[in-house]
Image 1 (cartoon, rainbow, N blue to C red):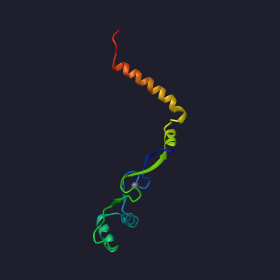
Image 2 (cartoon, helix red, strand yellow):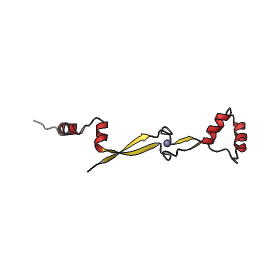
Image 3 (cartoon, rainbow, N blue to C red):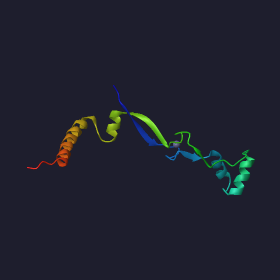
Length: 110
Ligand SMILES: [Zn+2]
């Protein structure tokens, strides 16, 4: 049996923003100095009836800014320093920590 967890990474295309520069604006900036009146003229010459928004939703992440993928649980635990062999060690530590916290929360008067 295999278990998976979800790993989230920032989208490499948009850097986690969820949007990118409109490709038409990218072309415009490459061809022009970027001033507003010349943008209106340039877009009209390119067949646009209106100047488009300068940013569009990222197609790679669908606008979330995040890429999700399934990672096997053992790989995910190893990635955060919890090798399967250390889990028993950790559970003993957590059990002791829990007992100590219980004792602090319920002090007994001697
Ligand atoms: Zn993206």
